[in-house]
Amino acid sequence: MRRAILALEDGRIFEGIAFGAIGEVAAEVVFNTAMTGYQEVITDPSYCKQLVTFTSPHIGNVGVNPDDEESAAPQVAGVIVRDLSAIGSNYRSTGEISSYLKEAGVPGMAEADTRAIARHIRREGAMRAVLSTNGGDAGSLARKASESPLMEGRDLVSEVTCKDVRTWTDGFATPLSPRSDEKPGEGLKVVAVDYGIKRTILRHLVEAGFAVTQVPATLPAREILDLQPDGVFLSNGPGDPAPVTYGVEIVRDLIGKVPIFGICLGHQILCLALGARTYKLKFGHRGANHPVLDLETRRVAITSQNHGFAVDKDSLPDTLRASHVNLNDRTLEGVRHRSLPLFSVQYHPEASPGPHDASDLFAQFGDLIRQRS
Image 1 (tube, rainbow, N blue to C red):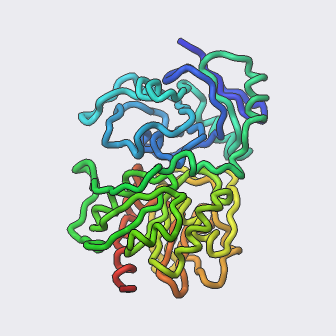
Image 2 (cartoon, rainbow, N blue to C red; image 1 turned 180 degrees about the vertical axis):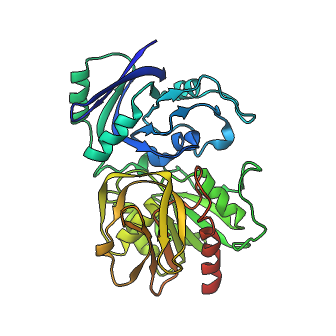
Image 3 (cartoon, one colour; image 1 turned 90 degrees about the vertical axis):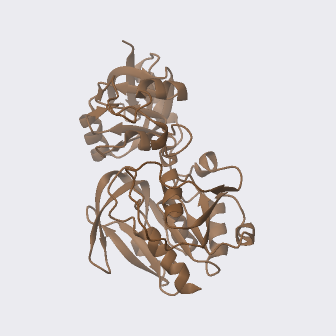
């Protein structure tokens, strides 16, 4: 068995057994608390340039399959697990995780003390690290980690956004997906701005009845409006929203001209465009079990989340009101404009993985557009 080393920038070292691709990669190390959906996490573009530690002990036990991919290939920098299953026992499985990661050039470390890693990150914060599966001295790897780029100030959207304008027509991929006979977006055209969009979000928009056009994050506002959308959707994506200045400027030019709905990074970019500020969380929110309170209805939803930055609720302009709050740490989870047809949430109503408590937000988007017209 080949040895694997995870070296953190503060000098902490963790060891395990290598799987996936052989290599060395520097990235931010984070942890995800979801009990299911490892393939969805691995292929989510929001995890670009991150080493994901799964706190669920058994990873690989349901194999991999094309229907559960949230993008065309794995997006994580590396994968860290406790117990790697060599057998994928599920009728939908078409392969196993180690070969899947190897083909994508993604290294992994198994038999790691993932509980200790998660506790260390919770105590000290998410930090830079190097994962090596091709040998190397632990001390030199830790130095490489400390010299690698910070997550703050990096524009990762440009690395994951689509390159051209395209039409998306696929609905839910499997009969296990939640379906509804209601089509609140029937006949409505939506432009989805791709900051690193998950396929499940696009599928939810289609299932809600929208005609969906996916566009690059850099497409100017005038060209978006030339597509004559009834609404604009701002997607999830990786990293720090602040350096995505082009995205902020584009959204600023769209505000007041078309209804807007944003999720995760899209929520942060919308808030920046309206004058709010963002900041880096100590260790982020990544998992499928985060309770969020709707401040208007007082309803609590258990949500799927994946972000390392958040909007400062004390920086909201008078034009915005807080609509949702995280019950774990009271961070801002959603906003609504007081007069314009736009809203956004920090969490992921499409889940995948996770609960479907908040999937009605796609229907609310359709209702908002129809109320305006």
